[in-house]
Length: 435
Image (tube, rainbow, N blue to C red; front, side):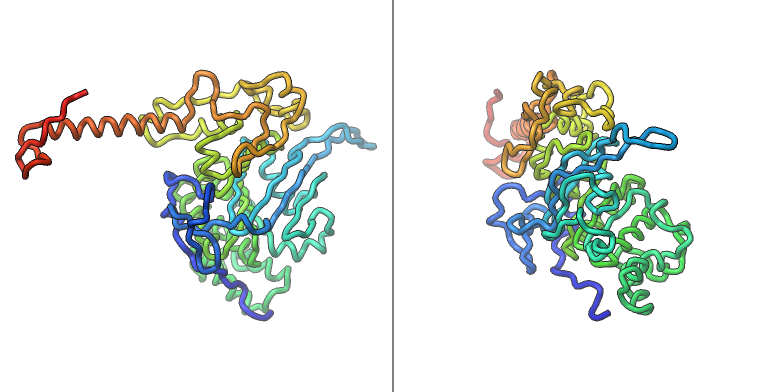
């Protein structure tokens, strides 16, 4: 092996802590012509200081009409296929270098199957997956081996994804052994370097997975994914099994690594607040199909698909005043079976906007605004009947607070002995008539 295992493409700008969940999404929506650029040419978000992808470049990963149908067979001796579970059914998306694409949806919608199918852990039933212009679906396992150096995965369960019979050093070094990178000493040095990168003591190489906490195990899984210097990491709910404090540590670690090594993430998660914090764009899945795709700030401020509106209405709000007024959209009925999905739009059986065409034809994924695509015959920002969208509630609360603050300031100026604008301390200011 020659050279080092990795060379960071640029300097880190900003921190995940600086962004904060309340600061909004990370997307580069709108005009970015006035934004500053880092030394490596990447754009710097003016609000968060974080590096964001340049969408003028070609995508590093392109998925087109991807399908994964699991066959259902019957018969004891001579089995025959009698149906199929359509876990992923016609998903198309693109991923740019340095971007985080969040994928959300309720359990069973096909998020994890999508990630595994992109990586070819599940061989797709149909469609196309291109990495840097190279088609992956037609490759054999041997041909895919060099591609796997470029695309890695962080699995959901940190307890099941690590071999309990292997030491941490051997777990992290295994990709290097498989791809025949470095000698024994170089691999050990690389393992120690990776442990240090993810915030663990390099001396832990001889310990076993059961000696670590859940958050530490997930860090080990991240270190293993980084071992081969990938360009793309598929993170399948990497923090769902961790408590809130450990979630924040792992999310900040992922952000730091992305800023340092210009990684691209497909971030699969249930927690919509987490996805907003980490993602540049967000894809919403329902019953194996993509129903909405938009810049994160646009999606949260102006959701167009009824299912997205229902998802966003379920996000807990820290502000008590907003929480009291917030209307939760409760969907009627259960999620249909992917074995026998409804005809037409898969969401029409639970949708308050559904009309006859919805049960007859599947709406195409069409652009309704800049960087905002929706698969709905009747898209729009309005929520369910009798509800107010969360964005409007926040606007109302902000306006009322501003009015109360102005009234308090006016009242303080009228009180004797207060500091006025026409004199020093102790003098009343000019009289301001009330409304």
